[in-house]
Figure 1 (tube, rainbow, N blue to C red):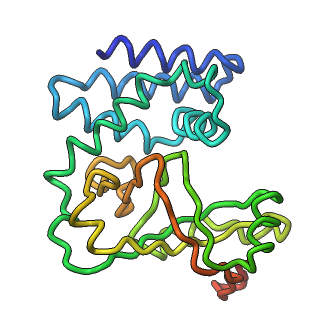
Figure 2 (cartoon, one colour):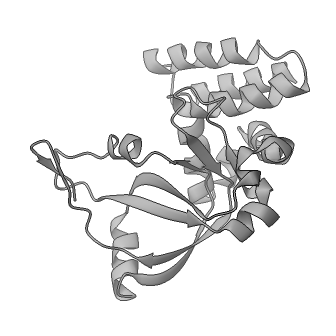
Length: 215
C-alpha cells in the first residue's frame, strides 16, 4: 500500500527530470506516507499530501483536465485512493449537519478558449463538468490572497460556488471538509473530480485591497 504510493510519486517526479524542487517535495510526500499505520491514517495522509504545494496535485489535475490517459497511468493508484477518501470521510463530514446552502470560494484562470466560449453564451447559465478535483475555501479573505493583482494580463477569476443544502444532505460523497487534514488549514472544502457546476454569471472582480485592484 505505502510502497505503491511511494513508487507512483517517485515515477511521477522522473517524468520531467529531477529538479531540486521535485526532489524536495518528493521527500516530503514520502515522509507523510510513512506516517500511515491504519485505515484512518491512510485516508488522512492521502488527503494531506494532496494539499501540499508540489507536483502531485498539479500533475494529476493536469492529466485529468487534458484526458491524458497514458500519463494518467503513472498516478491512477493515488487517484483511486483520493476518490475513496470521499466515501470514507462522508460519515464524519461536519457539513452533514448543515441545514443551509454553503458558499465556497476558489481562484482560477480561464484559458482563451474558455473565455471565448463563455462570452459566446453571454457569460450566463453555463454548465461545466470539471474533470479535476477542485480545492475551495469557506474563507473568502483567504481565497482572495491567491489572486494575482500585479499582472493585468493574467485572466484570473474568483469563483463563488454555492453548494445547495439538498446536495449536502443527499450527496456527501461529492465533497469533503478537509480543513483538519489540510497542510494549510484554510477551511478547505475539496470537491470531487467530475463535479457538474452551473455558472450563473461571470462578472469582473473589482475590489480595492490596499493600493491594488483585482480584476
